[in-house]
Image (cartoon, rainbow, N blue to C red; front, side):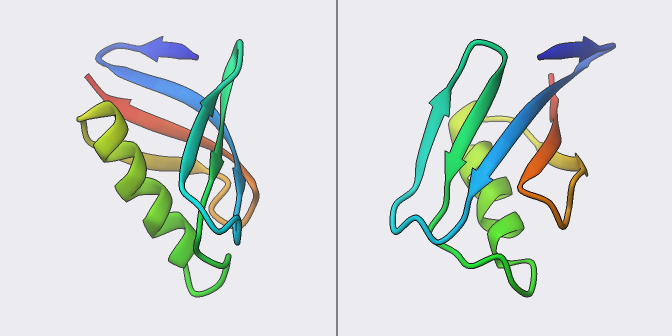
Length: 76
């Protein structure tokens, strides 16, 4: 996790098609289990919605749109 000005960037590994929504915090990153399949941007939309609810802030995927490993930016 690193802070860039007023924005925080975190590393996330997603697990699509998990059958449940869950956020697990590791030492340096997060593992997020999603119900959605990784097709037609469904998993990314579910991830952003879940993280907005979890952090109660605006969230953007900065890199890894087509990967399970993502960097997400959270507005402070």
